[in-house]
Image 1: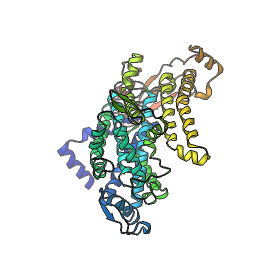
Image 2: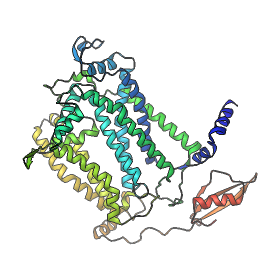
Image 3: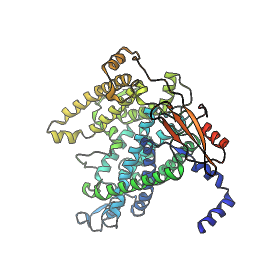
Length: 514
């Protein structure tokens, strides 16, 4: 009764009932790939909660101090306040190491989920009209997530993060004309500068999370305003959504996913060591760690820097250093391509229609081949960031590993993209997966012609309404009515009259007779 009174009082003042009733009836698709976006959202929640705890004990300062704590190898030694607070958080604060490592794992999972979510959107064509704005928001969130991840793991002022900052400083300085000014603006002076860690702290804790929160909110509002996309299947049309209602089915499922994400992240934080700054030691400009690999989400830039040859030159007397191309140009071209892809595809295909149904990746061989080739390229760069580890493990010279990766980066993405393109052309008219491809399909793909016996014509479907005791009316969608086991989708709601049930059925399937 108390809950009912509170709800009634709130509704009498805020008039929430119509909005909540409509929100609870929203349909969400059931396909598992739609969970990537939710995993990213819940990882962000964990990042905010654990990051708040970490910020209470972290001192973003490079001022010299003496560490006094339980970690004996560093006890009584002079170090920066940032490094000393990171050691103290990990060794002296109760549950500090668990929270700190969970925060780091959540950052890795957050960015991984965003990448997987963008891949799902890219390969299924979910970025097309009317969802171009949400695609641009998603790409911006990826860029901000990369920036926040890098600043976060660079703040403890340990030897590994200092090595990464030194590389970032050099890359920033490599920008022609404006490099020195940009380095001063971002790092606060010549590296290592006293202002670097405080500026990264402000960006990491306040600016970037606030921007991410705004973009996530905008992303969700646009998602609520527009219909959800869905994969083609019997009963699914451009003007309806088949799946689970927000309440109670989808709510229970998404809460279970949230608890699963919490369990996995805290399990990783408690069981798997990550970024042990006490082993790296404090940053010293005269030293560097070997091997030294960054987190995976920036390792592609590291790999590009390691593989790119020394090719500096001058334009009108100004030096363009070789790090400028792999460190600045590659990243700029990557995100420029992501931002422009919806416009490029619309220009190439002439498709300006609205799309609610997703594509099977095989239905667009050019898009699939391009995506697979680019993913292969960046995966090779990530692996190349560990060329020193590979050389040490295989007992081969580091130069041999570098030359091998250069050859792979220049050839393997093209081969992978062409193979994906060819297989997609062979499989797009088959009913099964890639395992169902026949020699005839391969020959047809090679001839660029459609194989005989393409997709079957759709079988007419109809809607049915009936009364249950009460009377309460329901409706159902019936496809393949003449088949032995026809597809039947039954409404989950009851309606007061036949007309109301028929109107609801026509709203879900506007082109199907009742």
